[in-house]
Length: 233
Image (cartoon, rainbow, N blue to C red):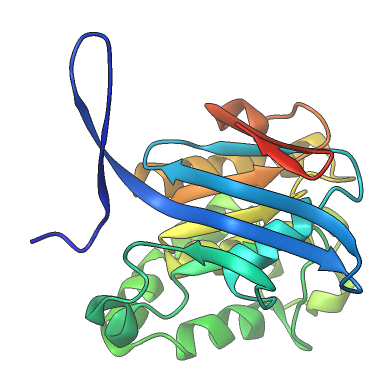
């Protein structure tokens, strides 16, 4: 028996069996309880959809991602991941839904210390696997030569790549990237694209927000747009 939510979609040629990554139902969120930010009746994120979340500033893209990541409390309605309440997740699923802000928080100390924080908080088996991948990850992020450098001295692109590398070490089931390419140079965005592509190949489901086309949005095959408080897919 699968712990995922299976849905049947009508198709002119055949019936396609697909799996839901997340389900948003009756989600209403307001600022100060009076100004409605968005009111989403029903939306399903399907397996295989790399979602580009679009919308003007202030429409609630970051808030929606934070609600999905469980970083803010839901005021009304529900955001659910069909596998979220399974025994598998409770026992071994730490870090399975990751949210990465455009200005990521880094810990005081070196690049290595930031990576060690992730590694040391993983269960033993996953920690051993992450340690085996670490060298390859540092190469993908072009951070190998910076492991002993204080994280506070990194450039904006290096900081974002470090934050993405920490998420990559977790190998999450869901990764939410909030304006990951904002104000970054082309080199950093290209390097991040390779890391994201690697996660997609390892079956991570990814949603990202961005105001413009870039190497990262080229990986998307589906779009959600928040406009006038409604979500259009």
